[in-house]
Length: 166
Image 1 (cartoon, one colour):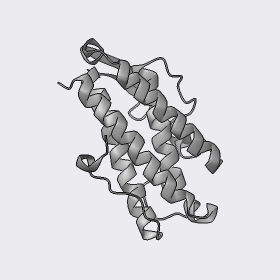
Image 2 (tube, one colour):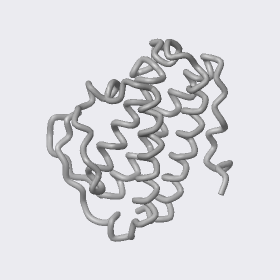
Image 3 (tube, one colour):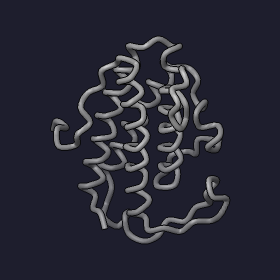
Image 4 (cartoon, one colour):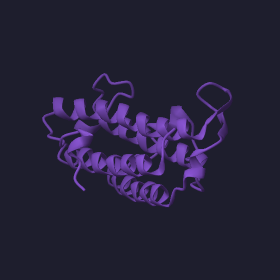
C-alpha cells in the first residue's frame, strides 16, 4: 500500500521531469519533434501527447477531471499544436499536484472499477495500484522521450528521483 506522501513525491517528480523534457524539446524544430524515431508511438511529440492523454484518462478515473474524449489510437494526436500541448501539459501537471496535495489516505483504499478500452473489458483493481500505474506509465514513456531527445542532440536534465530538488 502507498500513502499520500508517496503520491505527492511522484506528482512533483512528474512535473519536474515534464518541465525538463518540454524545455529540451522546445529547442528542436517542429520537424525534429515529429520525426518518427522508431519508438512505440513514433515521435517525440506523439509520445508526449500520449502521456498527456493517459494522464487525463487516469485522472478522470481518480478525480473529477474530464475524460480526454478519444481512445488510445487518438492519443498521439489529441493536441496537434506544440505550444498548446506544452501549455496544457504544464496546466495539467498543476492539476495533478493539487490533487496529490489534497489526497487523503482513504482515497487510496478500496477498489477502482473502469472499462478499459485497451483490453475491451471491465477492470477492477485496488485504487493504490491504479495510482501507482499512472506514475509508472508516465516514467516509462518519458524514458522513451528522453532517449529520443538525447539522440536528437537535445539535453534534458537528469532523471534520477533522488536528485529532484525540494
